[in-house]
Length: 205
Image (cartoon, rainbow, N blue to C red; front, side, top):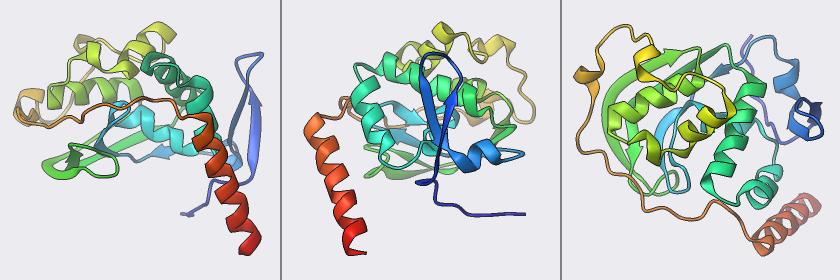
């Protein structure tokens, strides 16, 4: 059965890597199967959103803002958190929509870039690594891959990734526009402002 959900409530605490309590949408914990379907796009904080970053959407509501504050010291620290959430959620399948990707100042103000590709796999880190190759992003500049290497999750070695269908050389693009980067962390003022705005919206609803 297909179902669309609002993952803002309720929250399920998961004691996975003690002593940290990981919070995640309860629907994800209750699901028999998780299929991750990201849209491939540039991202001003993390260079690009592919398989790993998309799973941050399973974190409920305003907790995302707090995690930007708590874990946003730098891109590598934030990347490790994203990788660990991906390891916790462990989707059985990921399908990346790159038919029309986004480049430039994504994910909110980017521009369409037709790539004409769909990629899928069971290893979210391997998919991120493959997309680095497709758009020519050096892996040392993509902190999610560096974080995955340090955490020890997923396959980061392109030579160890089995690629079926078209070869990478057939789908690589030479002119993908990456964004000008901005900090990952949110200021305390921004987090408080967002929380107050959310409470006011609930009050007047």
